Length: 77
Image (cartoon, rainbow, N blue to C red):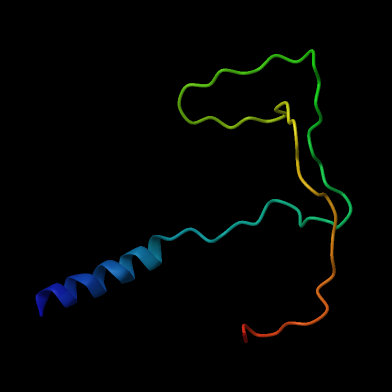
């Protein structure tokens, strides 16, 4: 019983201390993809650990394009 009371108390405290979600990044616009390009003169970075690479030398990005969704089957097979 006391475990339930503690759990409810912790849920209330975590809800009060939670920060509101801030959506600072703009919404993506179809047709305006910012992909990096290949440059033979740029150096290859050597990373140790977890790092954020901005402007990395990208060899292949994939099929860039948009396809409109015409209908949704709702998961029926």
